[in-house]
Amino acid sequence: MLPEIIRVEASQPSLLATRLSNQFSDEPLVALNKHPSLQHTYTLLIHFYAPDGITPALDTDFGHVVMQSTPAGSLYLRQIKIDITHLEPLAHAFSLWEVRAIYTVAADSSEGVLVQYVIGDPVTSRGTVTSVATT
Image: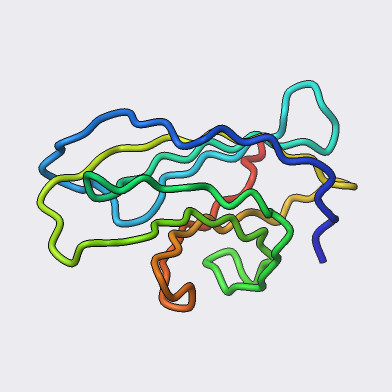
C-alpha cells in the first residue's frame, strides 16, 4: 500500500488558451517528479483540455489508492481527479488548462499516480498513469 498523504499544495486550474478547434489529447498530460530538495515530496504538473465555458477543479484528496494493470505490471496508483461538472456531448471549441501540485507522503513511494477526469460517473472516466522517472 502507498504511504499516507501528509500534505498537498495545489494551484487552482489556470486557463492557458481558449477557443481551440481541436482537443489534442483525450487524457490529461502529466509530469511527475521527485522534489529536488524536499524528502518524500513530489511535484505534479497536469495539462488537460475541457470544452470552452467549463471551469474544472482539482480534487485535492490524494489519499485514494487503486491497483491497476499497466504495461509495467500491476501497480498501486495514487488516484488524482480533475472534476468537470458538465460536459457538452458535442463540444466545438476547447480550452487548455494547467494545474501544479506538490504533495508529501510519509515514506518514499515510486509506484505512480493515476490522473483522471471525473465527468459524472467516475467508473467510466478516463485517465493517465504516470510514474516518477528514474535517471
